[in-house]
Image (tube, rainbow over all chains, first blue to last red; front, top):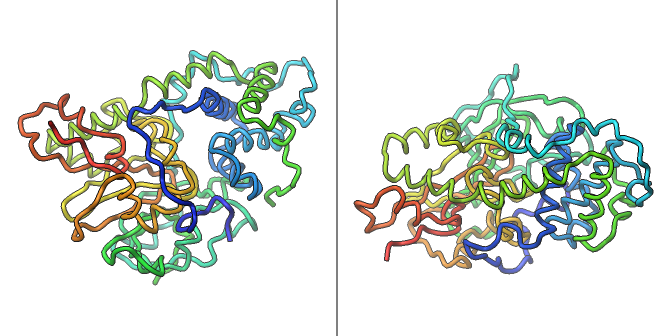
Length: 225
Length: 204
């Protein structure tokens, strides 16, 4: 099993509530602040994107479910700041210590924001892992969907697509493996593919026989069919 | 081992979300770890400068220029970067084309992955449990909730953004737009049409 965030295919969530095209980007001012505090903290360089995703996923199922989107962000961030030693529990309790912080010289400055966001953080890396599959080839995803390096760790194979037969649609190149990178075990780049699944492979009552779901899956999530 | 302690540090912050954010921002600012002016700059970027108007320009250009469209479908990342659209959450772009035979729709069931440089910050519904849970299993019912009904012989391909590749849907150019220039076409392209939950506007 993976975790509570892995909700693809779940029943019971009710209708979707579309928003107007011109609705505000941030429904509340604090949403904008939560996003900005999270991005700015990331630039302190104490974690990568896989670590930060995993921090949100590790919220307890109760918190994950009751928190709104940006509450998950800010709470995952607080947990991560403590876990990585950037802040202490005393800091979160509001105990003032006015010593300069050793990471303060890394703080993102206003004039550096534009370049930092424009630079991005590509995930492609050279890899010595050879591509085992070619476009058009049939593959089966591993089952159960789980991190094989760290029990209960981060993975990007959703439960709904585990043990399913699909077809390689494209090779994206070689990318950082989140299952490793989220846990300080290195980037471990390997081939990653877009894999197309017939809906009959995934659902008991597919809506339409010709529909498909495509997932981006690392080679270690796949086996030959 | 992942940490599964049940006394999560975040519980030490105020429970009310706006206060929780404010408290963390204050602590980090006091320690010199974040600069409030940098936060304002980040917010201004995504509120005013980077948004679906970027993607709309790409779509209108693809509708107008067959060579551009071919290059875009072949390898979108350098093509959109040439227009100035590159950066965080848009490092690896793939554009998927709607046709009479196939409709494409994008979701991220595991979190909220979305092509920021082209579409900005995702709308609330894209990040909702309902969309994340249902888009892969019943895309046609989801589309109906957006007012879209596809012909029975159009198949749906749902792209679940499980990695760092970001998808943009290239919608079909609406009928009755012959002779329109790129600016006029851009005005027809909606955010939802580039996620695949909507169709472009039809000229009046």
